[in-house]
Image (cartoon, rainbow, N blue to C red; front, side, top):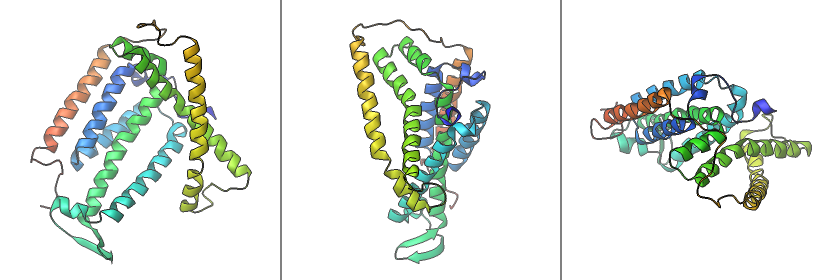
Length: 276
């Protein structure tokens, strides 16, 4: 069971040895670059880099597979919704219309729309491996201590650390509720249709939220009873100073972002247009 939980896993890789702060800065700059650019060339390079980083971190698929499947499911629904409500967004952006198939009304399949939605797919896929890598390679306590060392309030650092610690707990609760539903005869495996699984999985959200709120209440009461937040400063058991590899990682993220955005906005638009 533990191997399937999305949580920190201690390994001896250079990514694990990085400070949580440098990984957070890299993640933020990487995500910001992915959000700003619609240049397919930049996004393809980012996707390759993300996959390489994910591979180097030695992250096991059984840790992230379930979460990744949910992300893909959400992405498919999102892409369908984009096409359903804005079927000609791509033609407006790229200024041309190459119709491949007419379906009904104003809903056509065009090269421009497919290219636009392909870029959206790339934007998600460039960030997802980095997010998963950050979660499974970052020790929550070390991360909170490193943030505080950089001047961030320890209350904020603890809040972020606890949020990261909650991820495996929420995932574990989800699995328990899912198994309880299956024990009652509610099929949630691939034996049922995709739409049926989505409806039945969505029914788990509310009991999952209630159980999470109960846990938050217990933790907050325990911290209050121990006088958490009374003093302005506190000592830390774990913490890392930024070393050479941390500065190299941050420097790479800054340089890559500058180059990527320069390429993106070279023609005055963040959309690379291969149709003109």
